[in-house]
Image 1 (cartoon, rainbow, N blue to C red):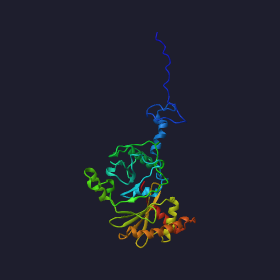
Image 2 (cartoon, rainbow, N blue to C red; image 1 turned 60 degrees about the horizontal axis):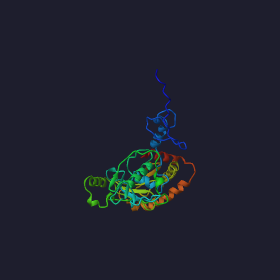
Image 3 (cartoon, rainbow, N blue to C red; image 1 turned 90 degrees about the vertical axis):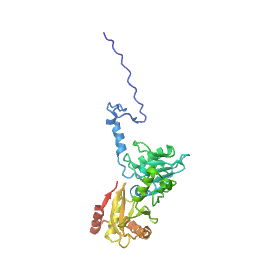
Image 4 (spheres, one colour; image 1 turned 45 degrees about the vertical axis):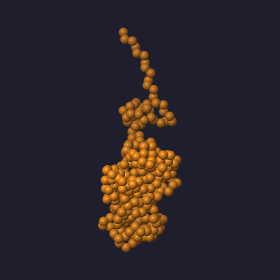
Length: 322
């Protein structure tokens, strides 16, 4: 007669601290004790946290509008980054860059300094968290190495957690991508080829000095001014419609407000400019427009019929970039 088996002790369950559910394999039983697999229980929320789109990933950072411009509009630019807790001793500087060679997410230079690429595909719905992950990995990598792209979790720090939000954010726009290297003339191989391709494709771009986050660019047919604005979309559309209906939305002769982009939760009005209108020539008209816009933003009166038509036209000419 077979012996009765003694009851075996149950496998020990992970200790849950303050309601936290440990991460386990997708097919393993969920540590919460529900009896379901992790991927069908608490893993579902974890996966959603990674993929959920953050509409304004740069909100709370100084220069949010410039972050959006460097992410979407500006070919070649850099900006120094100041960390809340300071840089590691072996990292002399950390710099944001629009694009890096071969679309690297980041680069740890031979001298230990870090370049963080902004215009890269990201693995989750939160660009800020993805960039923070890359920045941390770059600062701990060996000098002389590019940082590979990796999928992030939904639990790591964001840029808002790492960066000193009291420090100014001051982009510097470049005519080319020579900032990639300490000695661009010595570039060879793939890096040299990537540098040549990037320089040939970059549109001449300048940042205006009299207003915030307004970028002039030159194209073969006409020039443009693209201005990232922080105001709530409905309020800004109403203000632009008021100015459009009043004939006060241009930046001077032969210029025209043609529409707007929507990027990372902010609006980017766009003006067509004559090909001879330089960035310097935009400064005074842009400053005057900013004053008119401020007055229009302060109005709470309902739009009249002409202003509503103008708003409808602006809405129809809006393109979402992200």
